[in-house]
Length: 341
Image (cartoon, rainbow, N blue to C red; front, side, top):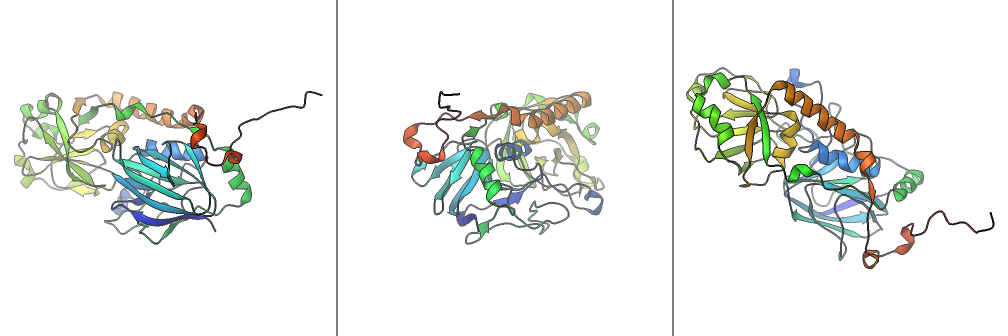
């Protein structure tokens, strides 16, 4: 039996995969990882399937003890990472011996990080997904004293995991990008031209009122006018919609958003930038930029292409021998011949 025993875990940690597809008609939104790119990084590093699940950690990680030998990776928003008393790099394959302690601290950048096990984390499959939706009581939200188990695998697959040790991925550039692109929303025409123009002119911040459902925003231009908010009938919502409540404070809807709502939507964050927005820390300044639908489609196709090409971007990690606790686990010399061939 292998896996990770949870010794401590920060609030907000959940099991996530790519989410539930095809159930919106029944009132169940997609959910899934807040940063699909970050999720895909770990799948590529470990060779896990694209539907495999990981532990999503919000703002802070936890403490884990290895049960048996395990191959893991940490991706998404970088957090402080240690194995026993040794610092370990982010976005690389890590080998854990039985009893090793993995410590994941606070975010050094971004907001949502991912802990992956070789083969993916075993969690209940509900409506075709292992993602947890806490408000809807779907899926599994792990707690201390429980264990994260990889999906059933034998010694052969563990050996395949050993071959991946030393692989890493470079840090993606979207952590430095502070421009979030938006489209006109279903009710943009109901807002004053001044308010619509302020979307691009103002500087924005995400407040500390945020979770997987959405995040309230703060503008350097102040509150928006929302006269229609008290009289509008509820209609459909999609992830990325920017609703404006009756107090004029906008909120962007994220992975676990509700399927319908009654507040007017002044704009919608394009699908290719939602993960970027989700990783922006509280109070960090960013700008919005209105784009055309054709641009939004092109950028979404580009993001999918980037995620599909991640396996070609894996590199060998440059290691300091002082940090290598067990040299026998590393292929320091490979392809040697006797000289008599």
